[in-house]
Every structure is written in C-alpha cells, then in structure tokens.
Length: 130
Image (cartoon, rainbow, N blue to C red; front, side):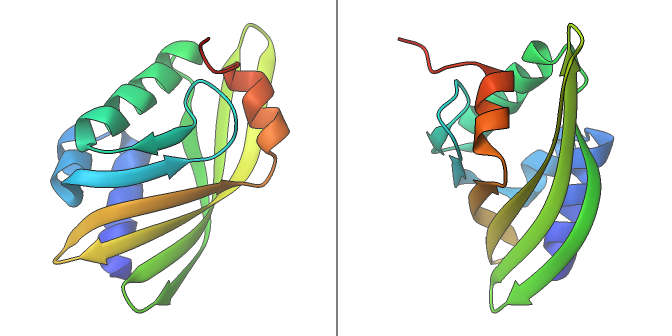
C-alpha cells in the first residue's frame, strides 16, 4: 500500500500524468476539502484531472506538492502529511494537507483530503461558482 502511494506522490511531484492515471482507479472517489471552486467530491480520474488542471491554471502553473512530510499506513489506508505551494499575482499559498489514500488491488480507489488551513485555501482558490 505504502509503495503505491509513494509512487503516486512521486508522480505528482514530477507532474507525470501518465503514471498518475495508471495508479488512480478510473472511478476514484476524491473528496477535496473546503468551500472553494475545487472543493467537493470527484467521481472519476477525469474529474480529478479537471480539478488539478484548474488548480494549475488558477495558480499560473505554480501549484506543487513541495514536500512529503510523513506517511503512515493502517491496513489498506495510507495517511500522508503533505505540503502544497502555489502562487498567483503576488499571492502565495503554502499549506499542509493530510491526505488519506485507500488502495485496493494496486489502485488508489479513494482519497480524503483534509486542509490544515481551509480558510487560506478557500481565499487562494476562490469561491464556489454560483
């Protein structure tokens, strides 16, 4: 389980979309925290890629997984303390998230992301569309 998640995180750091797509289950359920335009439940690899693509666009391609601080395993779940950064027009985001990955048959089938500073993320990413 840990190896799969570490491979996924390394692919995220390299922005290796092919590897990311190969590790995520096609019907992955990704729950993004907060009350911003990228928050909420995503129900497929396509929706996850749309979310992340939007984050790259909104951050002028600066969004990055800057650090993998710790990884802990419990059965088929892997919890990771991760540091994300992004910048846009002189405004920066530098925040930790706790992501919990569920792995089944070598694929990530679910991700529950928790923001340590949801207000900062909401302010950076912008509000939900009306």
